[in-house]
Length: 164
Image 1 (cartoon, rainbow, N blue to C red):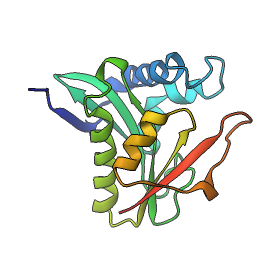
Image 2: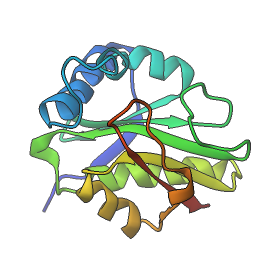
Image 3: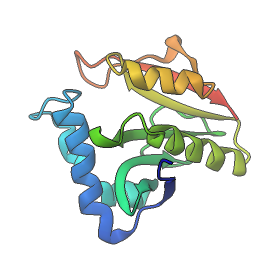
Image 4: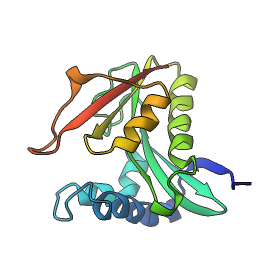
């Protein structure tokens, strides 16, 4: 039987490791150029914890994933309206992929949005993250192409929303 995935708030003593995990997934996974100005943002998990809600996924006592849940008013929310939340920087270590870790973190974000009585949960994702697109679509998210955007030239982001 597979080990359960536990999603919880990150602890301060985990911020550095969470930042490195996020950089590892995005940079070494080929999603972000190592010279990108976005790398310090990915690395700064303490800032995400201070300005959003930093969640981690743990399997057998090991942190194998992280995501920033951005409630209304969070400076990390880029698309969410006043009655919506957003999640960003979802990262799962390579060895933990395909084991329900991403799904558990998405579910935790959905549950937080519902518990807060919000109307929706939004996200942006890179065009080449096809396995993430499948995860979001299976969770009920729908594409919102009218909100697709590019934070910098050459980085096209697709957007999704879930009515909660």
